[in-house]
Length: 203
Image (cartoon, rainbow, N blue to C red; front, side):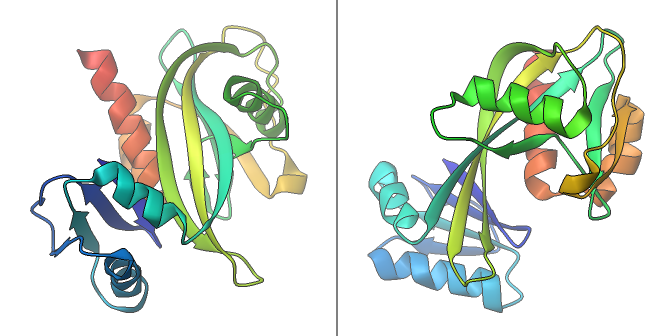
């Protein structure tokens, strides 16, 4: 199953039909173009494309875009607080594009250290990959794959925002603050990865 966010609307690609607002049985490449059009140009807020050959559908879907790989992390302190950045008025997790020759792990650590000024962040486990779509200024359609890792930090808090990247604040948030302050003012894929991380920790 693949969850992709299109302008904060959910596109679910799955093997079996799911109980969403609109459901399309995959017949051909055109089905995917119709799905994107509905999410981008109508009031449809969630859509499911389903078919037995899910890996084939995903492969066809990716042909519609230029792929950008990124990496980032959910950084926690010993008390359980999580590190967030504020950019363009929204709360976000530190992340960024992978550079040529970098591993996902190297990229995640570099981006976190650049965006938050923290040093010696400890990388732990891979969590999952999120997907979202955006249009670049030149009209290119981009499918961004962001690979998320669990991180740990127990050093001197030297955090400060990377202003040249449009980051205006770096803050540690506890669970209550995440639910009351971050979730109402963040992106769907950020909510998705945090909830997924919490689920794995509660098991």
